[in-house]
Length: 493
Image (cartoon, rainbow, N blue to C red):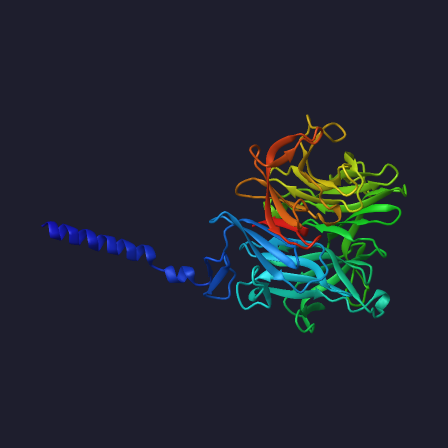
Protein backbone atom coordinates (compact mmCIF):
# COMPACT_ATOMS: atom_id res chain seq x y z
CA UNK A 1 0.00 0.00 0.00
CA UNK A 2 2.84 2.39 0.86
CA UNK A 3 4.58 1.61 -2.42
CA UNK A 4 1.37 2.37 -4.28
CA UNK A 5 1.03 5.76 -2.54
CA UNK A 6 4.65 6.67 -3.45
CA UNK A 7 4.02 5.62 -7.04
CA UNK A 8 0.82 7.68 -7.21
CA UNK A 9 2.61 10.78 -5.86
CA UNK A 10 5.39 10.32 -8.43
CA UNK A 11 2.86 10.12 -11.29
CA UNK A 12 1.09 13.28 -10.09
CA UNK A 13 4.37 15.24 -9.84
CA UNK A 14 5.42 14.05 -13.31
CA UNK A 15 2.10 15.15 -14.77
CA UNK A 16 2.32 18.57 -13.14
CA UNK A 17 5.89 19.06 -14.44
CA UNK A 18 4.85 18.13 -17.98
CA UNK A 19 1.97 20.59 -17.85
CA UNK A 20 4.16 23.40 -16.48
CA UNK A 21 6.82 22.94 -19.14
CA UNK A 22 4.43 22.39 -22.01
CA UNK A 23 5.15 24.92 -24.75
CA UNK A 24 8.51 25.94 -23.26
CA UNK A 25 10.16 25.59 -26.66
CA UNK A 26 7.51 27.86 -28.14
CA UNK A 27 8.15 30.41 -25.35
CA UNK A 28 11.87 30.42 -26.07
CA UNK A 29 11.44 30.64 -29.85
CA UNK A 30 11.91 34.21 -31.03
CA UNK A 31 14.17 35.21 -28.14
CA UNK A 32 17.88 35.37 -27.47
CA UNK A 33 19.24 33.73 -24.34
CA UNK A 34 22.08 35.68 -22.70
CA UNK A 35 24.62 33.68 -20.70
CA UNK A 36 27.10 35.39 -18.35
CA UNK A 37 30.57 33.83 -18.49
CA UNK A 38 33.53 34.16 -16.13
CA UNK A 39 35.18 36.97 -18.09
CA UNK A 40 32.13 39.22 -17.60
CA UNK A 41 31.40 39.33 -21.32
CA UNK A 42 28.01 38.49 -22.77
CA UNK A 43 27.64 35.54 -25.12
CA UNK A 44 24.49 35.08 -27.13
CA UNK A 45 22.79 31.80 -27.92
CA UNK A 46 20.84 32.77 -31.03
CA UNK A 47 17.48 31.03 -31.34
CA UNK A 48 16.04 33.45 -33.89
CA UNK A 49 16.61 36.89 -35.40
CA UNK A 50 14.54 38.76 -32.81
CA UNK A 51 16.08 41.18 -30.34
CA UNK A 52 17.30 40.00 -26.93
CA UNK A 53 15.43 40.62 -23.73
CA UNK A 54 17.76 42.18 -21.15
CA UNK A 55 17.09 43.10 -17.53
CA UNK A 56 16.71 46.87 -17.02
CA UNK A 57 19.88 48.53 -15.76
CA UNK A 58 22.12 51.59 -16.17
CA UNK A 59 24.03 52.02 -19.45
CA UNK A 60 26.72 54.60 -20.27
CA UNK A 61 28.71 55.62 -23.33
CA UNK A 62 31.95 57.62 -23.25
CA UNK A 63 35.35 58.06 -24.83
CA UNK A 64 38.49 56.50 -23.36
CA UNK A 65 41.02 55.70 -26.08
CA UNK A 66 38.07 54.92 -28.34
CA UNK A 67 34.33 54.63 -27.80
CA UNK A 68 33.50 52.61 -24.71
CA UNK A 69 30.31 51.26 -23.16
CA UNK A 70 29.61 50.44 -19.51
CA UNK A 71 26.69 48.42 -18.17
CA UNK A 72 25.86 47.84 -14.52
CA UNK A 73 25.83 44.10 -13.81
CA UNK A 74 23.13 43.48 -11.21
CA UNK A 75 24.33 39.93 -10.53
CA UNK A 76 28.00 40.59 -9.77
CA UNK A 77 27.53 44.26 -8.75
CA UNK A 78 30.27 45.53 -11.08
CA UNK A 79 30.46 47.69 -14.18
CA UNK A 80 31.00 45.62 -17.33
CA UNK A 81 33.12 47.72 -19.69
CA UNK A 82 33.54 47.08 -23.42
CA UNK A 83 35.47 48.84 -26.17
CA UNK A 84 32.91 49.46 -28.90
CA UNK A 85 34.99 51.26 -31.52
CA UNK A 86 38.76 51.57 -31.22
CA UNK A 87 39.38 53.23 -34.61
CA UNK A 88 38.64 56.76 -33.43
CA UNK A 89 41.03 59.66 -33.10
CA UNK A 90 38.56 62.44 -32.37
CA UNK A 91 37.01 62.01 -28.93
CA UNK A 92 33.96 64.17 -28.46
CA UNK A 93 30.27 63.86 -27.69
CA UNK A 94 28.40 60.57 -27.39
CA UNK A 95 24.71 59.90 -26.87
CA UNK A 96 23.10 56.65 -25.69
CA UNK A 97 19.52 55.36 -25.70
CA UNK A 98 18.07 51.98 -24.77
CA UNK A 99 15.19 50.38 -26.65
CA UNK A 100 12.31 48.53 -25.03
CA UNK A 101 14.18 45.22 -25.19
CA UNK A 102 17.14 46.57 -23.25
CA UNK A 103 19.50 46.89 -26.24
CA UNK A 104 21.79 49.96 -26.19
CA UNK A 105 22.17 52.29 -29.18
CA UNK A 106 24.97 54.87 -29.32
CA UNK A 107 25.42 57.89 -31.58
CA UNK A 108 28.92 59.34 -31.61
CA UNK A 109 31.10 61.83 -33.40
CA UNK A 110 34.48 60.56 -34.44
CA UNK A 111 36.91 59.34 -37.04
CA UNK A 112 40.45 59.95 -38.17
CA UNK A 113 41.10 63.65 -38.93
CA UNK A 114 40.45 65.39 -41.19
CA UNK A 115 37.44 63.10 -41.77
CA UNK A 116 35.10 63.19 -38.79
CA UNK A 117 31.66 61.66 -39.23
CA UNK A 118 28.39 60.88 -37.48
CA UNK A 119 28.61 57.27 -36.34
CA UNK A 120 26.13 54.82 -34.82
CA UNK A 121 26.65 51.56 -32.93
CA UNK A 122 24.23 49.00 -31.51
CA UNK A 123 24.77 45.82 -29.51
CA UNK A 124 24.19 42.65 -31.58
CA UNK A 125 25.87 39.98 -29.45
CA UNK A 126 27.88 38.34 -32.24
CA UNK A 127 28.92 38.66 -35.90
CA UNK A 128 29.27 42.44 -35.68
CA UNK A 129 31.98 44.55 -37.30
CA UNK A 130 33.11 46.15 -34.03
CA UNK A 131 33.37 45.46 -30.32
CA UNK A 132 36.71 44.62 -28.72
CA UNK A 133 37.97 42.96 -25.56
CA UNK A 134 38.97 45.66 -23.06
CA UNK A 135 42.07 43.81 -21.84
CA UNK A 136 43.50 42.26 -25.01
CA UNK A 137 42.04 44.57 -27.65
CA UNK A 138 41.07 41.57 -29.75
CA UNK A 139 37.99 41.77 -31.96
CA UNK A 140 34.87 40.28 -30.36
CA UNK A 141 32.20 41.45 -32.82
CA UNK A 142 29.42 41.98 -30.31
CA UNK A 143 28.61 45.44 -31.71
CA UNK A 144 27.67 46.67 -35.18
CA UNK A 145 29.03 50.10 -36.15
CA UNK A 146 27.78 52.28 -39.02
CA UNK A 147 28.62 55.59 -40.63
CA UNK A 148 25.36 57.53 -40.66
CA UNK A 149 26.40 60.78 -42.37
CA UNK A 150 29.62 61.06 -44.32
CA UNK A 151 29.39 64.75 -45.23
CA UNK A 152 31.01 64.34 -48.63
CA UNK A 153 29.94 67.79 -49.81
CA UNK A 154 30.71 71.16 -48.35
CA UNK A 155 28.79 74.40 -48.13
CA UNK A 156 26.59 75.10 -51.17
CA UNK A 157 27.49 71.75 -52.72
CA UNK A 158 31.24 72.36 -52.97
CA UNK A 159 33.61 69.50 -52.25
CA UNK A 160 35.59 69.83 -49.04
CA UNK A 161 39.01 68.35 -48.41
CA UNK A 162 37.75 67.25 -45.02
CA UNK A 163 34.48 66.12 -43.46
CA UNK A 164 33.17 67.48 -40.17
CA UNK A 165 29.73 66.01 -39.57
CA UNK A 166 28.04 64.74 -36.43
CA UNK A 167 29.07 67.16 -33.70
CA UNK A 168 27.00 66.97 -30.50
CA UNK A 169 24.70 64.08 -31.50
CA UNK A 170 21.56 63.29 -29.52
CA UNK A 171 19.80 59.94 -30.01
CA UNK A 172 16.35 58.71 -29.03
CA UNK A 173 14.46 55.51 -29.83
CA UNK A 174 10.99 56.44 -31.06
CA UNK A 175 8.61 53.53 -31.70
CA UNK A 176 11.64 51.27 -32.01
CA UNK A 177 13.40 53.51 -34.55
CA UNK A 178 16.74 55.25 -33.78
CA UNK A 179 16.68 58.98 -34.52
CA UNK A 180 19.64 61.34 -34.18
CA UNK A 181 19.94 65.13 -34.17
CA UNK A 182 23.42 66.54 -34.90
CA UNK A 183 25.39 69.42 -36.40
CA UNK A 184 26.87 69.33 -39.91
CA UNK A 185 29.76 71.81 -39.96
CA UNK A 186 30.38 71.18 -43.67
CA UNK A 187 27.03 72.63 -44.61
CA UNK A 188 26.39 74.66 -41.44
CA UNK A 189 23.17 72.76 -40.78
CA UNK A 190 21.38 71.29 -37.79
CA UNK A 191 20.39 67.88 -39.17
CA UNK A 192 18.19 64.92 -38.29
CA UNK A 193 18.78 61.28 -39.21
CA UNK A 194 16.21 58.48 -38.98
CA UNK A 195 16.91 54.79 -39.51
CA UNK A 196 14.85 53.57 -42.50
CA UNK A 197 16.53 50.24 -43.34
CA UNK A 198 16.75 50.92 -47.07
CA UNK A 199 16.06 53.63 -49.63
CA UNK A 200 17.57 56.43 -47.57
CA UNK A 201 19.92 59.17 -48.73
CA UNK A 202 22.65 58.37 -46.19
CA UNK A 203 24.15 55.49 -44.25
CA UNK A 204 27.50 54.00 -45.22
CA UNK A 205 29.44 50.82 -44.58
CA UNK A 206 31.96 51.59 -41.83
CA UNK A 207 34.69 49.43 -43.35
CA UNK A 208 34.38 50.24 -47.06
CA UNK A 209 32.66 53.63 -46.93
CA UNK A 210 30.22 52.51 -49.63
CA UNK A 211 26.69 53.91 -49.63
CA UNK A 212 24.11 51.62 -47.99
CA UNK A 213 21.11 53.94 -47.73
CA UNK A 214 19.77 52.62 -44.44
CA UNK A 215 19.41 56.13 -42.97
CA UNK A 216 17.54 59.24 -44.07
CA UNK A 217 19.40 62.48 -43.29
CA UNK A 218 17.67 65.84 -43.68
CA UNK A 219 18.29 69.37 -42.44
CA UNK A 220 16.20 71.11 -39.83
CA UNK A 221 17.77 74.46 -40.62
CA UNK A 222 20.87 76.33 -41.74
CA UNK A 223 22.39 78.59 -39.14
CA UNK A 224 25.93 79.73 -39.86
CA UNK A 225 29.47 78.62 -39.15
CA UNK A 226 29.19 77.83 -35.44
CA UNK A 227 25.45 78.01 -34.93
CA UNK A 228 23.11 75.20 -34.00
CA UNK A 229 25.92 73.07 -32.65
CA UNK A 230 24.61 72.75 -29.09
CA UNK A 231 21.50 70.63 -29.48
CA UNK A 232 19.55 68.00 -27.58
CA UNK A 233 16.36 66.15 -28.39
CA UNK A 234 13.44 64.38 -26.76
CA UNK A 235 10.30 62.89 -28.22
CA UNK A 236 8.82 66.39 -28.14
CA UNK A 237 11.45 68.01 -30.34
CA UNK A 238 14.98 69.38 -30.55
CA UNK A 239 16.39 72.26 -28.52
CA UNK A 240 19.37 74.11 -29.96
CA UNK A 241 21.23 77.35 -29.51
CA UNK A 242 22.34 79.90 -32.07
CA UNK A 243 25.58 81.12 -30.62
CA UNK A 244 26.14 84.16 -32.85
CA UNK A 245 24.75 87.60 -32.09
CA UNK A 246 22.09 88.02 -31.00
CA UNK A 247 22.37 84.70 -29.18
CA UNK A 248 19.16 82.65 -29.27
CA UNK A 249 17.72 79.47 -27.80
CA UNK A 250 15.43 77.65 -30.23
CA UNK A 251 13.11 74.66 -30.18
CA UNK A 252 12.22 72.62 -33.27
CA UNK A 253 9.21 70.32 -33.52
CA UNK A 254 8.59 67.84 -36.33
CA UNK A 255 5.19 68.75 -37.79
CA UNK A 256 5.29 66.88 -41.13
CA UNK A 257 4.13 69.84 -43.22
CA UNK A 258 3.33 73.57 -43.12
CA UNK A 259 6.29 74.33 -40.85
CA UNK A 260 8.73 77.22 -41.16
CA UNK A 261 11.90 75.08 -41.44
CA UNK A 262 13.10 71.69 -42.63
CA UNK A 263 15.07 71.01 -45.82
CA UNK A 264 15.81 68.09 -48.09
CA UNK A 265 19.15 66.52 -47.17
CA UNK A 266 20.37 66.25 -50.78
CA UNK A 267 18.81 69.10 -52.74
CA UNK A 268 18.61 71.48 -49.75
CA UNK A 269 15.21 72.57 -51.03
CA UNK A 270 12.66 73.77 -48.50
CA UNK A 271 10.30 71.06 -47.23
CA UNK A 272 8.64 72.69 -44.21
CA UNK A 273 8.35 69.51 -42.14
CA UNK A 274 9.72 71.20 -39.01
CA UNK A 275 8.56 74.18 -36.96
CA UNK A 276 11.43 76.21 -35.47
CA UNK A 277 10.49 78.71 -32.77
CA UNK A 278 12.34 81.11 -30.52
CA UNK A 279 12.44 80.26 -26.81
CA UNK A 280 14.83 82.86 -25.39
CA UNK A 281 17.31 85.41 -26.72
CA UNK A 282 19.77 88.05 -25.60
CA UNK A 283 20.72 91.17 -27.51
CA UNK A 284 23.73 92.02 -25.32
CA UNK A 285 26.92 90.87 -26.98
CA UNK A 286 28.37 89.83 -23.62
CA UNK A 287 25.70 87.11 -23.21
CA UNK A 288 26.16 83.84 -25.11
CA UNK A 289 24.13 80.63 -24.95
CA UNK A 290 26.37 77.66 -24.36
CA UNK A 291 24.57 74.33 -24.31
CA UNK A 292 20.98 73.26 -23.84
CA UNK A 293 19.23 70.02 -22.84
CA UNK A 294 15.64 68.89 -23.25
CA UNK A 295 13.78 66.56 -20.91
CA UNK A 296 13.61 62.96 -22.13
CA UNK A 297 10.34 62.21 -20.38
CA UNK A 298 8.88 59.45 -22.56
CA UNK A 299 12.26 57.77 -22.99
CA UNK A 300 12.37 56.97 -19.28
CA UNK A 301 8.83 56.76 -17.98
CA UNK A 302 6.40 57.12 -20.85
CA UNK A 303 4.63 60.01 -19.09
CA UNK A 304 3.09 62.87 -20.99
CA UNK A 305 4.88 66.08 -20.10
CA UNK A 306 5.31 69.52 -21.59
CA UNK A 307 8.86 70.00 -22.88
CA UNK A 308 11.29 71.97 -20.81
CA UNK A 309 14.89 73.00 -21.35
CA UNK A 310 17.84 73.53 -19.07
CA UNK A 311 20.46 75.82 -20.57
CA UNK A 312 23.60 77.74 -19.69
CA UNK A 313 24.54 81.29 -20.58
CA UNK A 314 28.02 82.72 -20.33
CA UNK A 315 27.94 86.35 -19.16
CA UNK A 316 31.32 87.61 -20.33
CA UNK A 317 30.82 91.04 -18.75
CA UNK A 318 31.07 89.56 -15.22
CA UNK A 319 32.83 86.28 -16.10
CA UNK A 320 29.96 84.10 -14.92
CA UNK A 321 28.11 81.06 -16.20
CA UNK A 322 24.38 81.29 -15.49
CA UNK A 323 21.98 78.32 -15.24
CA UNK A 324 18.54 78.98 -16.73
CA UNK A 325 15.32 77.05 -17.31
CA UNK A 326 12.44 77.24 -19.80
CA UNK A 327 9.15 75.33 -19.75
CA UNK A 328 6.55 75.25 -22.51
CA UNK A 329 3.26 76.65 -21.16
CA UNK A 330 1.33 77.36 -24.38
CA UNK A 331 0.31 80.88 -23.41
CA UNK A 332 0.82 83.49 -20.69
CA UNK A 333 4.57 82.97 -20.45
CA UNK A 334 7.37 85.52 -20.34
CA UNK A 335 9.41 84.29 -23.30
CA UNK A 336 9.04 82.54 -26.62
CA UNK A 337 7.75 83.84 -29.94
CA UNK A 338 4.16 84.06 -28.65
CA UNK A 339 4.87 84.10 -24.91
CA UNK A 340 4.34 80.36 -25.04
CA UNK A 341 7.35 79.57 -22.82
CA UNK A 342 8.09 80.48 -19.22
CA UNK A 343 11.77 81.28 -18.65
CA UNK A 344 13.49 81.49 -15.29
CA UNK A 345 16.84 83.23 -15.55
CA UNK A 346 19.63 83.30 -13.01
CA UNK A 347 18.95 80.04 -11.14
CA UNK A 348 22.64 79.68 -10.29
CA UNK A 349 25.62 81.91 -11.04
CA UNK A 350 29.05 80.31 -11.04
CA UNK A 351 32.56 81.14 -12.16
CA UNK A 352 32.74 81.35 -15.93
CA UNK A 353 34.39 78.53 -17.85
CA UNK A 354 34.79 78.20 -21.63
CA UNK A 355 32.90 74.91 -22.04
CA UNK A 356 30.09 74.44 -19.51
CA UNK A 357 27.94 71.30 -19.81
CA UNK A 358 24.27 70.68 -19.05
CA UNK A 359 21.81 67.79 -19.11
CA UNK A 360 18.22 67.34 -17.92
CA UNK A 361 16.18 64.39 -16.68
CA UNK A 362 12.58 64.06 -15.55
CA UNK A 363 11.40 62.01 -12.61
CA UNK A 364 8.04 60.22 -12.75
CA UNK A 365 6.43 63.23 -11.03
CA UNK A 366 7.66 65.43 -13.93
CA UNK A 367 9.97 67.36 -11.59
CA UNK A 368 13.02 68.66 -13.51
CA UNK A 369 16.54 67.71 -12.43
CA UNK A 370 19.40 69.57 -14.13
CA UNK A 371 22.98 68.30 -14.06
CA UNK A 372 25.51 70.96 -15.01
CA UNK A 373 29.25 71.48 -14.99
CA UNK A 374 30.28 74.90 -13.78
CA UNK A 375 33.45 76.66 -12.68
CA UNK A 376 34.05 76.85 -8.93
CA UNK A 377 36.67 79.62 -8.96
CA UNK A 378 39.11 77.59 -6.86
CA UNK A 379 41.54 77.41 -9.78
CA UNK A 380 41.36 78.59 -13.37
CA UNK A 381 40.82 75.03 -14.62
CA UNK A 382 38.59 73.44 -11.98
CA UNK A 383 34.85 72.91 -12.05
CA UNK A 384 32.05 71.31 -10.03
CA UNK A 385 29.60 68.63 -11.06
CA UNK A 386 26.37 70.18 -9.81
CA UNK A 387 22.68 69.34 -9.68
CA UNK A 388 19.68 71.66 -9.49
CA UNK A 389 16.22 70.40 -8.49
CA UNK A 390 13.00 72.42 -8.69
CA UNK A 391 11.65 72.26 -5.10
CA UNK A 392 9.11 75.11 -5.18
CA UNK A 393 10.24 76.74 -1.93
CA UNK A 394 12.90 76.48 0.75
CA UNK A 395 15.78 76.00 -1.67
CA UNK A 396 19.16 77.70 -1.79
CA UNK A 397 19.06 79.04 -5.37
CA UNK A 398 16.65 80.31 -8.01
CA UNK A 399 14.90 83.64 -8.21
CA UNK A 400 12.67 82.83 -5.19
CA UNK A 401 14.74 80.07 -3.59
CA UNK A 402 12.57 77.68 -5.57
CA UNK A 403 15.52 75.52 -6.60
CA UNK A 404 18.03 73.48 -4.62
CA UNK A 405 21.54 73.62 -6.10
CA UNK A 406 24.17 71.28 -4.68
CA UNK A 407 27.58 69.85 -5.58
CA UNK A 408 27.95 66.18 -6.46
CA UNK A 409 31.71 66.08 -6.88
CA UNK A 410 34.41 68.70 -6.58
CA UNK A 411 37.94 68.04 -7.73
CA UNK A 412 40.42 69.44 -10.20
CA UNK A 413 38.12 68.44 -13.02
CA UNK A 414 39.35 69.48 -16.49
CA UNK A 415 36.29 71.40 -17.62
CA UNK A 416 37.03 71.06 -21.33
CA UNK A 417 36.78 67.26 -21.07
CA UNK A 418 34.26 66.72 -18.31
CA UNK A 419 31.12 65.95 -20.28
CA UNK A 420 28.26 64.83 -18.09
CA UNK A 421 24.75 63.38 -18.22
CA UNK A 422 21.91 62.46 -15.88
CA UNK A 423 19.22 59.77 -15.81
CA UNK A 424 16.88 57.97 -13.43
CA UNK A 425 16.69 54.29 -12.58
CA UNK A 426 13.04 53.52 -13.15
CA UNK A 427 13.00 50.55 -10.79
CA UNK A 428 15.11 51.89 -7.92
CA UNK A 429 14.10 55.55 -8.33
CA UNK A 430 17.70 56.71 -7.91
CA UNK A 431 19.44 59.52 -9.79
CA UNK A 432 22.59 58.64 -11.75
CA UNK A 433 25.12 61.10 -13.14
CA UNK A 434 28.02 60.24 -15.48
CA UNK A 435 31.11 62.44 -15.86
CA UNK A 436 34.88 62.54 -16.35
CA UNK A 437 37.32 63.28 -13.56
CA UNK A 438 41.06 63.82 -13.26
CA UNK A 439 41.81 63.13 -9.62
CA UNK A 440 44.01 60.11 -10.37
CA UNK A 441 47.21 59.72 -12.38
CA UNK A 442 45.18 59.17 -15.54
CA UNK A 443 41.77 60.43 -16.53
CA UNK A 444 38.85 58.43 -15.20
CA UNK A 445 35.18 57.90 -15.95
CA UNK A 446 32.89 58.05 -12.94
CA UNK A 447 29.22 57.48 -12.21
CA UNK A 448 27.54 59.03 -9.18
CA UNK A 449 24.39 57.63 -7.58
CA UNK A 450 22.19 59.52 -5.14
CA UNK A 451 22.07 57.53 -1.88
CA UNK A 452 20.78 60.11 0.62
CA UNK A 453 23.44 59.41 3.24
CA UNK A 454 26.58 57.36 3.81
CA UNK A 455 28.11 58.17 0.44
CA UNK A 456 31.65 59.25 -0.40
CA UNK A 457 30.73 62.51 -2.16
CA UNK A 458 28.06 65.21 -2.22
CA UNK A 459 28.52 68.72 -0.85
CA UNK A 460 26.37 71.64 0.26
CA UNK A 461 25.89 74.05 -2.62
CA UNK A 462 26.50 77.14 -0.49
CA UNK A 463 29.03 76.17 2.17
CA UNK A 464 30.77 73.42 0.15
CA UNK A 465 30.77 71.29 3.31
CA UNK A 466 30.70 67.51 2.92
CA UNK A 467 27.22 65.94 3.07
CA UNK A 468 27.79 62.41 1.76
CA UNK A 469 24.45 62.08 -0.01
CA UNK A 470 26.06 60.74 -3.22
CA UNK A 471 28.20 57.71 -3.98
CA UNK A 472 30.79 58.46 -6.67
CA UNK A 473 32.40 55.34 -8.13
CA UNK A 474 35.23 54.88 -10.59
CA UNK A 475 34.01 52.95 -13.64
CA UNK A 476 37.00 53.13 -15.97
CA UNK A 477 40.48 54.61 -16.07
CA UNK A 478 43.05 55.40 -18.76
CA UNK A 479 46.61 56.60 -18.71
CA UNK A 480 46.00 59.05 -21.58
CA UNK A 481 45.45 62.61 -20.37
CA UNK A 482 42.10 63.87 -21.56
CA UNK A 483 41.09 60.39 -22.69
CA UNK A 484 38.92 59.07 -19.87
CA UNK A 485 35.16 59.55 -19.75
CA UNK A 486 35.00 62.53 -22.09
CA UNK A 487 31.69 63.09 -23.91
CA UNK A 488 29.78 60.76 -21.61
CA UNK A 489 26.07 59.98 -21.67
CA UNK A 490 23.92 57.73 -19.51
CA UNK A 491 20.56 55.99 -19.89
CA UNK A 492 18.31 53.50 -18.15
CA UNK A 493 16.56 50.59 -19.81
